[in-house]
Length: 208
Image 1 (tube, rainbow, N blue to C red):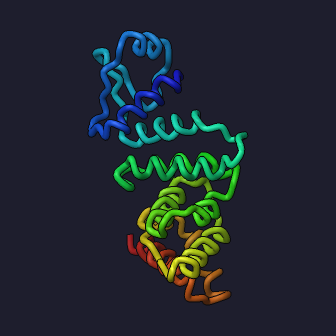
Image 2: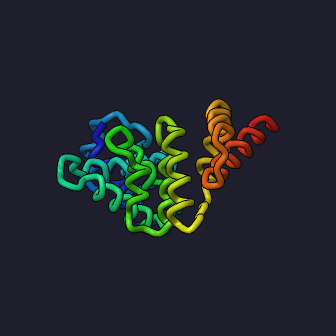
Image 3: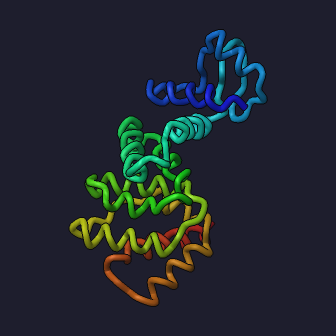
């Protein structure tokens, strides 16, 4: 798969805020892509047509990932700054490319902690954290509790909105039960929100 070409196209569509799955290919792009097996898109009438907006997000996030140098000094801070720039370009959360981009670094550094020490306001931090949690492979409950506690205690009892976390937990009843158990073992006001999210998600799952 010619990732770089497709990534660049997805990036162009993202920056243009184009409400379309189609992209008109030039001769060079077409010649490169005709040699590849398409994944998440198809070629038709000299156009690349993505299968879904999620596929555009996937390729756009990997475009940013391919341009980052993780070996450079202060790489963690640069990655978080890039994620916030993506978030702003996506009309502050119209797409979740920023969270998907951050999730690609989950095994390299503590993303939630890096968000906490950024100089962004609590709304921006929690919004991007919510996107990140949507895509992370495994929800680390200890890190989640630490994040909620730090936001509450360090940002004037700010709680934020976590619709994507709630959506994901609705499909993870075991994780909900784990969060509820941890909260009951040490009931604190700074983590009651994550408890409520888990409880609501578990109840919602059982009602379906």
